Image (cartoon, rainbow, N blue to C red; front, side, top):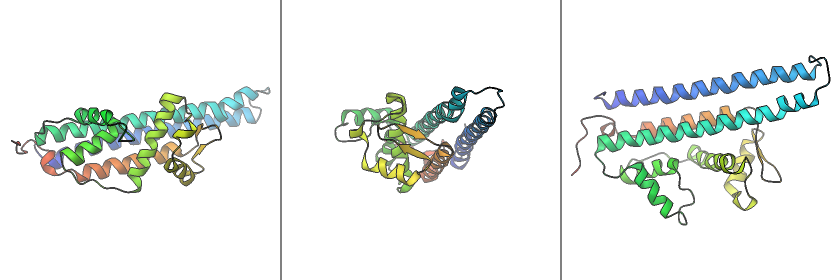
Length: 225
């Protein structure tokens, strides 16, 4: 186990950014492959009309890959933040864990709009470890990405009209044409959205990691009484 906070920070930074780079490369590789297949069908390369094939490579398959990649991205961020909180708890000798914070948020779900592990991790770092975290547009984007992830996981990509917040509408408008919410609440991710979301997550995690004091990332942290 490294005994330097700087070294631990570097390790976490490299691991997360490597995962993000790999995911970004994967998305681009599959997008390019689907585009080639679409051209093949569209130019008659299949030697017969195949509207179903065109639809699959133009709409269905791209939608599936973007949804899958986005949910994976969300999971990567969630796991990375929980792992970071684990280091902070261990080296800072805090009794409360991020899971304890998450449980508290679930009990107060009427008060707190969002109560998931990403929000719990941020709350843990701010309220338990007293870390001063950056606010701003990147964090607001992450909050909207939580709603989008929930729509894909729990609603097959659709979100109820009464759940479409003003913030989510503004987010979709600002990210247009990368994302669209149609008239029935269906979320459509366009080419380039996942790549953009990956960079948002990168900025958010890097800024969060940079904010953690060195004493919470090294073995010599003084134990609290």
